[in-house]
Image (cartoon, rainbow, N blue to C red; front, side):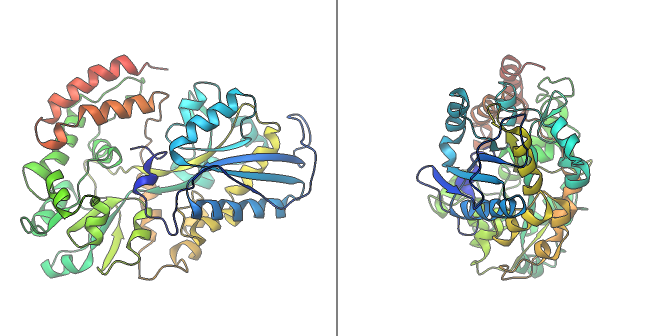
Length: 432
């Protein structure tokens, strides 16, 4: 499941999928659109994003701040349903009327490889934007062939949600970044009551088991751009994740989840007290605000090294943008502390801006109803590995989904499954 499609499992505060394209216009002067080489201060821009009602509200608040800062910029927000977003924006670009600013995520290089979005290095340089200083290790996350194609906007590492009462009852210390795989397994075993309660919700999603791969020194795509999923490091990591289900019995099987209810997955099972530990993103917090369990969050444990998947999205400029300089001016402000604070103020997501992640606005958000250690996101930001956002991202994910189906049913071992997937990926993924 990619970031572009994971809305189906999110529990953001106030999230509701839009039924169609929703257009909102920011307050600002009614100026004529500037040309690409014209005035960066005056422009009429279109910005496309995906999401639901809370996303619409949050982006609009941020856009309003842009136009307060730069009155000659006019930005019209178009909210597009997630399942039709890519097709919609690509159709707009192909017709010469693409958005000026567009939200992107893992599929960023699906766009960049087709010349649908512009490299931003020169614009960032002219603006004096230091990506590493503002965003840390994810500053160059949305790059391809040494060119940056999007500026990080929302970002948060996968974190550990744990049931404080269940841990206390067993006398187990809270999870931490210093936990090893063995520590995690030992805790999961103690927290499991066969048929009634499980230690861990599982790691069948790519974002979960890929973290173990990179912790184990493996890579999905190697440094030369070739698939590397049949390596010993990747096989060992995936097998460890599968053994939690079928060898150790500390993770519910698909049948166990089905018996809990047709729509129950790891997030809901954790909220219902059926599993003691869950690994997911920031959106899990919104889903727990009304839960009766005592819970908190912690960084993901480590393997041979620290590594964790980061979620989020970036802001890109389409190739048909009327005024790239003005569009970048808006992006620069949208990722500044003033605008980024709105992301956490509404409970939408984790702001990519490191200064905001360290601020009281993030560490103690006004809507939080329980004491939660939000420092975990800042601590985890140092562990984020650079995921392979290759142009063939969608085809690669389908190969994993199809090729691991039997593995996640306990019918196949990791080496057999990954050897077959490796061959398939070699026909799909071509080094840049």
